[in-house]
Length: 315
Image 1 (cartoon, one colour):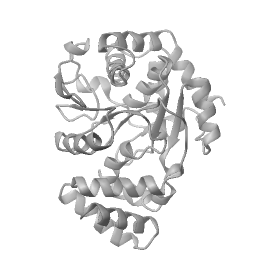
Image 2 (cartoon, rainbow, N blue to C red; image 1 turned 120 degrees about the horizontal axis):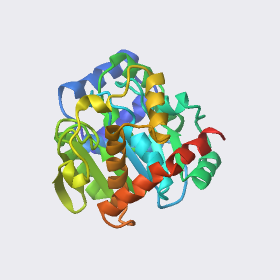
Image 3 (cartoon, rainbow, N blue to C red; image 1 turned 90 degrees about the vertical axis):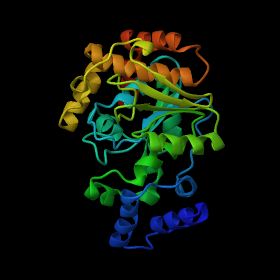
Image 4 (cartoon, rainbow, N blue to C red; image 1 turned 60 degrees about the vertical axis):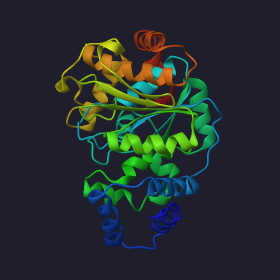
């Protein structure tokens, strides 16, 4: 489809012009073939046009993964978001319930007692007191509520996984996006180069949509492509088992709080810190990666990251 056709059809899906079987059939096409750049652009334009508009100011960062990597890690990018906030960078985190994972960012925050904010004023209030706010995607993308149950029933990665990181209604100036394949990384790179100069894409070469430290990490940014070993990021390689996320939402929330409280394992801490540091570096405001890593460590070890969580959960 052309960009215009893709935009038009997603607008029509949002307006309930098709029944569930027709929408399922349409979504299934993209399980059999890759999405094109034009289609991704068109879908993105439709969702941003249909979204509830919010103005939360400039100098915001989002750190988010596409999901769908099938790795069942704990909520690494969401934890990194609180570490980034504790380090002094404002974060507008966009997230949702897990579609193909046990616990998405919305699941874990809800489990920890956070109440989703629905207004620009409440989001701004969270940003002012904690340096972070959370935009629960179904609230700000009401047009997609008809697709939610369908995605859950499919239980598979769909093109909506690809759209989530691209349609944050706050339109953050900086974004670090984790992607589950090199093919998708390239697609995002083409799209984001046309729209923005402040993006960083990360992909662990063994298939994670984040810096996993289980293998080398490929980074795409406006300066090009780079591959980093765990050692170059300041850590040792770790095993897959050490960053698993548990089998229930309750376990995921327990792991989340434990890490912020300073009781995470060395491997859990390492992964979260590496992602937070790379995101801080991507803003270009805090110097090189090593300095950003020290900032991230200070945020976690001093309790500032935990304080950011408690400030938005308790209000």
